[in-house]
Image 1 (spheres, helix red, strand yellow):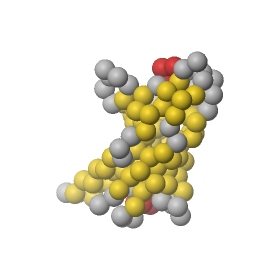
Image 2: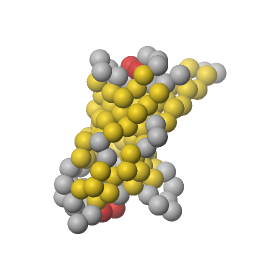
Image 3: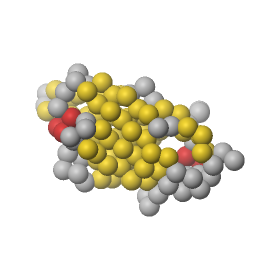
Image 4: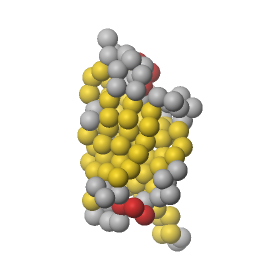
Amino acid sequence: QVQLVESGGGLVQPGGSLRLSCAASGSIFSTYTMGWYRQAPGQQRELVATIFTSGSTNYADSVKGRFTISRDNGKNTVYLQMNSLKPEDTAVYYCNAKRVRLPTVNDYWGQGTQVTVSS
């Protein structure tokens, strides 16, 4: 089992920055692919960024060049640095931990943190 707790959300003006954190506990953090997803009202949940166990990363086109995902395996924490925020970034942001060791798939979610970008 993995427990995920997000923090760092809030209200920010357009062009501002926020850093989200996701603290994980309960299993071997370094063996999990970590991701940030977001869901805006009336929209489907979408993938924002992924960081693999190797440290390689992947981003949605809408956030490339503005957001940076990172992980600290010593602190069991994954971060999402969000810069140049836009109103369309407003959403609930969720942390995800995933590990595939067939036939077992482990997939865990945090409770979400609200990010609101508005003047």
